[in-house]
Image (cartoon, rainbow, N blue to C red; front, side):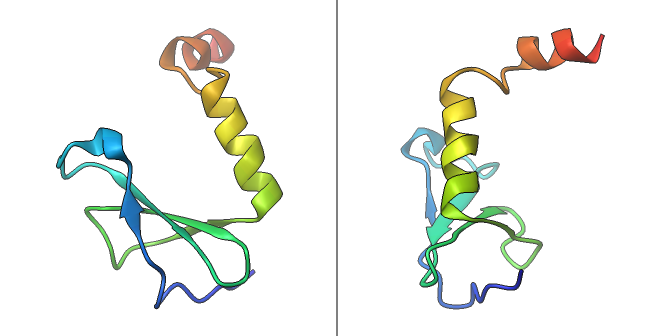
Length: 75
C-alpha cells in the first residue's frame, strides 16, 4: 500500500513535552493513519488502515505493549 504523506499534518502527542524522541501521527486524506519518528522526519513512515489503527491503540490502552507484558511473552 502506498499512501502520499507529503502534505500530511503531522502532530506529536501532548505527552511528548518537547522531547526530541517522540513519534508523530497524521490522519491522511485516504482515511489511513501515518506514524513516523520525530527525529527522522524524512525516514520511513508506517501507514495503518483505520481498523489496524483502532486495534493498535486498543492494545496500547489495554497494556498489551507494556514492557513487563512483552518480557513475559518473550520467556
